[in-house]
Length: 438
Image (cartoon, rainbow, N blue to C red):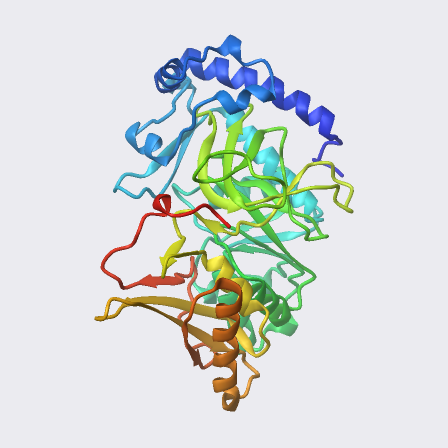
């Protein structure tokens, strides 16, 4: 497959070992932050000989990026930096990442691989509805499309009128967006009776975790052949570091550019393949801001075994949640993805929901789920639907909940990421004080 090199596990291991040695040496020699962190751990570059030595290296985290603002982890002279991108921080300062020309080229090539893995051809017309500017999303989707050789239609998260117009007039074949934006567009195209006039066959979703129910709803409304999930984060170049293939078994990640560990978020020890844990990444070629055991706080799992598609790159699952979007309800750690999974299995429900947490005067917490009814469902079944949802939540997550069934489209739609959890309690416990991912 063009853009995607043939490789196997042994070749990848050799590349990763060489890349790890280079990264540690480069970071130690050129980054005061990494030199200090490695010296404190008693590690010098010569101590890193192979992949088994990865476990001895210290971690870094978002707080290290914010502490090093405005150019955290910088490991090259500033005159070698050709671009910066940033993502939102939690303390008022954005996480700014620097890129050299090689970093940009590597990122763009990885993104072109994603388009190839999705089965695009140069005749495709790719309408891009993700954010531009400081964010990595728009630049990544567009430059990857241009490197691949398809036609880019770079609208960004513009208004639905413009997206509908361009989709009809340009006969767009691929739509790239957040899941919330894709659902909004699917419903809007139906409302305007434009489905018969568009040619979209594939959708690539990024930047937002989404449920199987939402994917099915978008696919049913638009009649597309495939919906692909793309992975990435600003610290690790941006979107384009992996994509699920047409088999949709998991996300092939570009292991010749970074090492992925899945660790228990409390013990920071590896978990077996198939067991969820925190994604921790180490880059192999990144020059301006290399990552050494960077804790992403995304939760996923490694998927063992070869993929039927024949691509030799390994697989991780779609992002199941984040250690920092997990909430604690009656001493149980819950991820929104667990709620997604329950709702996706119950017929008669739509894809949109909200989780509201309240603290009662008697000291007990209450969780209320507001869930939309499916567009073709009978409101006379609302009581049975609510009981089914509450029962499944109780059976599978082991907590009690109140369930309100709402009319279809009662919850707000957005061009960006949907907010799912509304915690109205006065205090929220720290994840680090609780048990590990189950």
